[in-house]
Length: 150
Image 1: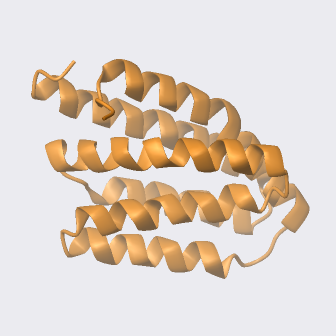
Image 2 (image 1 turned 135 degrees about the vertical axis):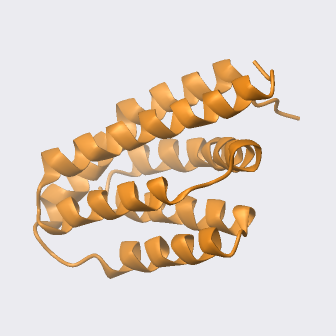
Image 3 (image 1 turned 90 degrees about the vertical axis):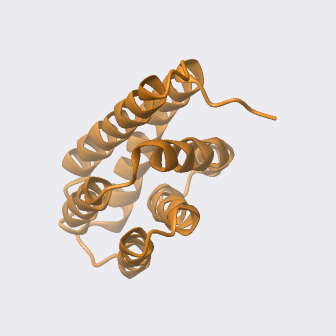
């Protein structure tokens, strides 16, 4: 059984922030400016689950949104690494949302990421994703801290 604590959240976020934005950059550079309907579908599913208070389903849609982005990199090693890490990331996010409540901020951040990606702005989309990962980790740490779960 994995315990979600401050160290796990930080280590996971550091790993993701170091790799996932790069995978997105590769994906956007390969795709160019183009609609990304698969990502939009997952973004909408995530939003609907959030509004309905379905935290677990929101977490799965969130995971799938990220997977759509990094999988388009075409780099099998990055995809495998991030897919393995996303299991833990989904557990961390769902735990954090249950403790502190999920909010619309993550959905808005996802929308900004996909907007930049669809415009073909690889560097900007990558930076938005890095910031999103770090912001989410901070929120999850704050939720743990509020409950004394350090």
